[in-house]
Length: 288
Image (cartoon, rainbow, N blue to C red; front, side, top):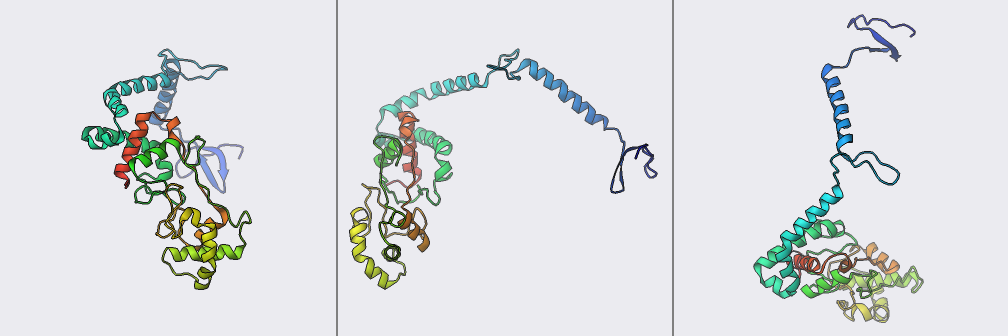
């Protein structure tokens, strides 16, 4: 349309635009909307003047207030450190056993540990520490590297398969993927492991795999399949499975030899924070 028309129903002039027979009315914007819009523009100008706003080549406009979130966070952390100073010093000097036998110190450690766990550990182990497929459950009594307070503390310190020189390390061979065993024997071993955990399995396959298990698996998992916490070898006789308990999950683990990585928190946290985290996990997540 080259000329504007007046809508017969509303009596409002149109903009001249039309889509599929629908004409756009040229109604003015509500006055309140215009006031809000121009107020927002004015507020943004004031913000640009007072606060850091415009990026430059090597820096940014600092604003008249000279505000810096980085400086503010540093100041808040200094205040928090000072506030926690006395209890933090006690936590540093106390042994793990002393922390758990001192109600006040334990309460402080649990508060710190809970905060640290939520910020750093819950991503993998879940908010409540229940874990997920491939990530250990910290709420049960199954611990690959031991569930005592000292064991948990050590695992947090050095990690598992991490870059730490003293990291806890174990390696499940990829029997199928690396061609160490033929597919038929991997199938038989799967049935043998199913039988170890008390579930129905192919008896003929279990019988065939008995000698194979002793030759290939017993060095880590034990003759009876009970595992070994010194090697981080899981117990194959219970119903707890890190990568899933279904027959296909067990077969995949024997075939691929999966193993996760636990970071070494010793290089990221202070000694007292590592202690607090260990106490929290031990106290609230089924430590031994």
